Image 1 (cartoon, chains in turn blue, green):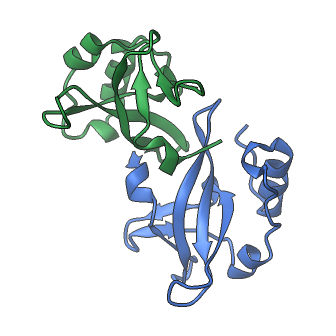
Image 2 (tube, chains in turn orange, brown; image 1 turned 90 degrees about the vertical axis):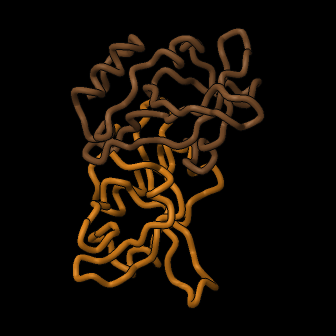
Length: 108
Length: 108
């Protein structure tokens, strides 16, 4: 297992080892105790102008060599991801859209 | 959903509203994306002498009135809980013992 404290701030890389961003925090499905999303910080320059977007947790796998997570989500996919509505973290409909966007099977 | 950032530090109460401690952090089952344990800080006095022990996440439910989690785990159960071995977070055997100790059904 891994601690939630150690996940937050951990880098996320592409399969070829490019740095895509880092995990800002996790969103937990209260009913099931499943992690629904990792909220990823990406883009910007020297910490300015960064954006955050939720991605399906199961798109990330930990790589001990890199000391971070690897995902096949691309930078373009992050930039072009649908903007979450205000109620996104409670919206089943939006969760489905987000998982579909990233081609991730549902956990629910 | 709830953010991992908002869970850490949140108070835990008994069903009658007694303050039992707080959630230090969460332990996440890497394979399944399930939360395995909430590591609870409890006991001590004015922040000194506190102890930490992992409890099954599903023993906690959020109470919006109290602004914290409620559990039917007792102070005695926390104090008398089996001490986790060094490899506890990777041990399926220990997880089973811990869940059995608290009478919690398995999520795996």
